[in-house]
Image (cartoon, rainbow, N blue to C red; front, side, top):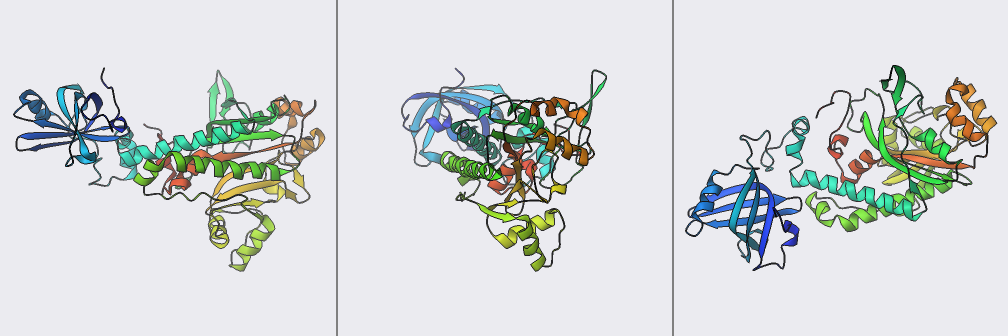
Length: 427
């Protein structure tokens, strides 16, 4: 076997034979002793090679290059002077893959690399414990979300990512050739998850890629991102959706705080879990609050207004409700001049958008026509409303942005393994 134990499993194994495997993180020759710090996904452990007893292995250690992949079989011993108080005295070292030198970037922490350099050599960047910790936290966040939703009776579904029509208009759609026909990459599963509300699958969620052809070059936008979308039927208002969203956020963050203590410590991050219910700020009130600070807005909030409002409100998490109808898609239910909609904000930045949908066929068709949309182009969607559609609502939440805000990352691309934006398609 190339490995019998991860480094996290070595405590309490002193005196036993173990086989560890990983990367040569550090190499040191001190007089008649060689040291190799071996790193795996959970941490590091010291391998100590006395020259007098292990001449052959000592020579192997001297010729080893940093970041080479090795497997080490030996005896685990206690040593107060070693990192973690334990060390492996090897019987055999196998070099599984010798790393070339020099490395494409420094991962020791002594030299700080620019984000673009890190992304160009992402395979190397991810070997840094702090970078890897981001994705272990992200994994825990997704697990917490799934656990909560499934506990609330939701089932996970997967909808098409190649579509004939967009949910939110054509300006931000990526066109693709689909066997000689025009098609698009999906902006959102919105229309499909609403169709599912007519089937009896009345609580569904999806965690999947979505695509927006927005030529943004900000620290919070991507062309391809992971979206959490859920839809729930038999609701009275968007308030029920907001309650589920806030409880999901609290539950997921609580899960991360409990499962990722080591990762959060490594990242120097204190996780303050908010308490539900979150504050509700009607759009009209938001306008008044901003006007009092000299910031006038009309029917929507730009990024500057969002940030300013966040500073005024002071809460980390809060909802903005009742946006004007003109600013919302055709599928959002109207309530006079306002829409039955909400945005979940996190420290002055939109994290999610949702609301109650228009489930009445005639009202839906009329709104589509008022907005200049041809209902015939959406018959795969509108037909589901003819034959029994319950009142329903839902939300779309950006997982990448949630992870970014959760960990206080400066750039959303740090929260994505291989980010895609208007200039980056490789690696």
